[in-house]
Image (cartoon, rainbow, N blue to C red; front, side, top):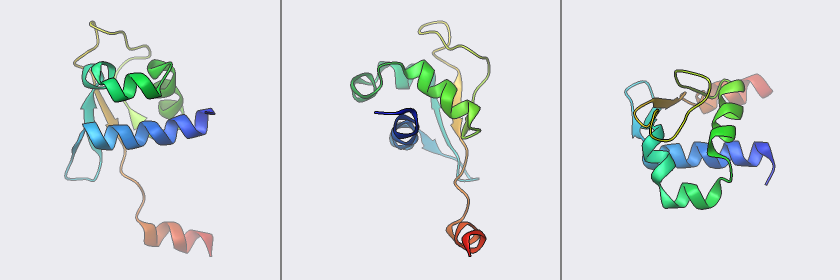
Length: 92
């Protein structure tokens, strides 16, 4: 699986494990993701995939490096997807 595929899977898992916010974003804590069996089986390097998604400005979280235990309560926020109508209009 390449980085782009992993980032897409990460977005799916954040939506599965997180809670939708009024603005359309999703929030989940690092601890919930780290201790989830499905995530453990999908991602060889969860922290690396999170950093790749953060670099692409798809999500936010405080800090640079997340460590199990120390950062279990850090909130990861998946930014809302742009509305489909705007995305489709920009293609035309």
